[in-house]
Image (cartoon, rainbow over all chains, first blue to last red; front, side, top):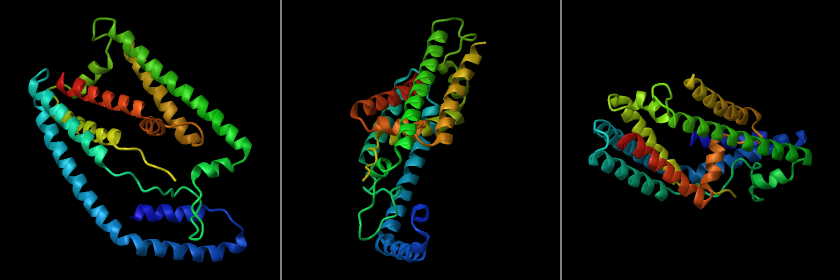
Amino acid sequence: MRRRLRIEVSAFRLRGGAAGTAALDCARGRDWLRERRGEQANARILTSSGRAVVAGAVVVALAACGWFAAALPPFGVEANVVTFSVAAAMLAMGAALPRRPASDLRGRWPNPDQPPVPVAARALARAPADAARDSSLRVWGLIAWLLAALFAGAVELWELFHAPRSAYPTLSSLANEVLGPGHRVARAVAFMCWGACGLFVARRPWRRA
Amino acid sequence: MNTVLWVAAAVAVCICELAGRTLRRGWPTAAQLLRAARGHALSRLALVIGWVWLGWHVFAR
């Protein structure tokens, strides 16, 4: 709730406009925030407490499963059952989580009389030079990410097809030094993080206005 | 020697992420790439399969 309001205030502060209209706009911004607080406060409080209970239950369940799974020997049926059960539960929970409402706070400060301007429309209104620079940076960024991923994959393959493993460690053997069967706490924490990532992966992406 | 290769790969990934966070506009961060991947059904399916395989590989094998 606080974070949302802070974002709303930031969006209001970042809005451009003539200095002469600043006082009027500030008053309208305060009214707008009060309206939003009044309309949605109850629903948000209930939603946030419900979310906290669900999140706490998920964390406790993941911790219990992680602590249990960390003690299981590898290559066993029990380890497979626990891992795939947790994966299925996380995927189902992530798919059931609701999407964010179709509003975009990163758009222009919303005037109650006008619909908010989405980010895509604001990007179109930017100067062509800025848009070209952004597009160029995006292409170079994608190329850089692709090269970094290819390099990591090449290193993994190079190490995989060479021996001995102590001299040519793969990512799995490096991780095994930290997350191996002898390290129960680290293994349990990693299991929790892995389960939490499942929620993110399975959750439907946010919609934007 | 071969650990140096892993360090180089990690540095390359960190540089890409730092560039995305420093330049902000245009250059994608890892989170933006993941979010974009989640937006398409096939890439989302690939993400899910990769995530399940990772858990099986680390915790069950």
